[in-house]
Figure 1 (cartoon, chains in turn red, brown):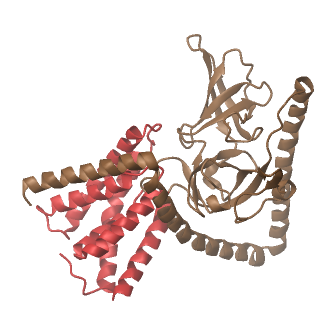
Figure 2: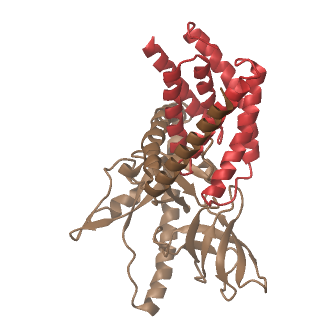
Figure 3: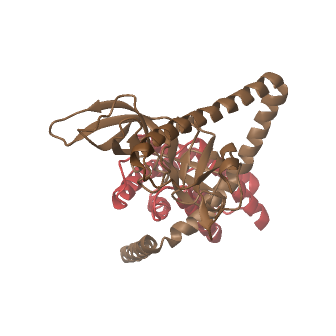
Length: 156
Length: 296
């Protein structure tokens, strides 16, 4: 069961990295963390978070800090939203996607200023928009795949 | 969860985050960890797929689709590439000879060797904010941080971050990139900086007295101690003078279209050990023809 899980998430990471190659500036891995959180698998979620932070920091061009902020922002919005919405509600996940789009814009801007780097990319708002719309779609796909792959996984 | 606990969590996170951020700024430990794990993992994921893609593409183009014509075309294209570089080097050699005759004393440029590397991807991930490329060589294979990167047409940038076998190149079109250049004919010096993808480059600090001309080739001056002297970088496309500013406003266009790059050349300084030239790295990555002539 554990090996099957590892294989699933390894395949997810490979697919996500390839997807990121074709859509620059967009995080295709973040919805995986959300699906894992909704399965209430704390250890699995923490491992995924650690791996994703290392991947995004590794391929990113900023000094350390942005990936950690990015994933923490997602978790904060998710836990705050759970007070008002059902965790697996597609509308809630779409709103979360919009918040993440805004967070993408805010974090990149903050890091550019904090690390005294050059001008901000002109296509950053477009990337944030793509991030906002892609997030719920990937979440839906991954959730369906997880239901097929691990039907007994406990969901919220 | 009570409000007090939320505030406590936020405070602890902020404290830990700022602590890690400050510690990493001083030591770079987490950046190195991310390069050795995350960047290298992404390289490992992309390389087999690209290898398979190229294999299928090569099989199709070389064995099924007009086998002979394609092979002939490849050979001729390779010849043209070699000759373009040789011609560019010869022109620079000639210019250098003229200056040497008048200057008699000139420190000879240090030896450099070239190594080929495949482009794995463009910008990848939400935090790849700079104009950059991911390549299939790392610091074990000639792509340490700061290594100059070029193609047969000219300079494209330098290595920004490096893992053992994967690296990120900062392209010269990025606003954070600066290269010391001189114009080929008038020898006007300046700093070439980027303005983002698909935007002209700025040539800064060119004095009003400098006899720079439109269409003049800009080559690396070697003064930044990063790039070897004499590599073509860009062509001057616009010059404006303003009486209120002590420098000319010069724009230039890169010689390389980075969007369609598949391979690049890494320029490695040849280092000497007890008077004998040696090569850094472990010999990974495809060799370029020039290396055979330059390598010890």
